[in-house]
Image (cartoon, rainbow, N blue to C red; front, side):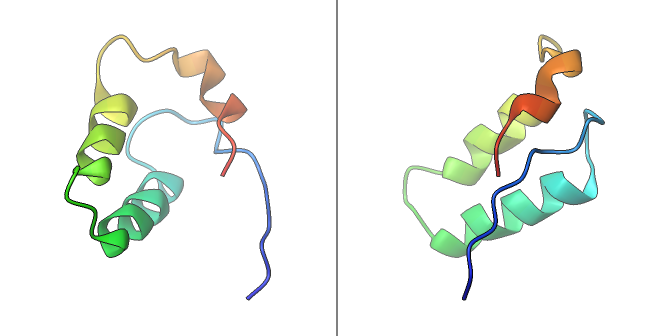
Length: 57
């Protein structure tokens, strides 16, 4: 499997990128609930929406 780096979408909120990252994190099965942290970060009201495209995935 090859690895590809790119920036997250410029659109904040529940997007296709959001679902892809969440699916990946849920699949890891960590007991620390990493996916829940992702959910909180991506959906809370204080999210710096103009900067979401600076997230690397």
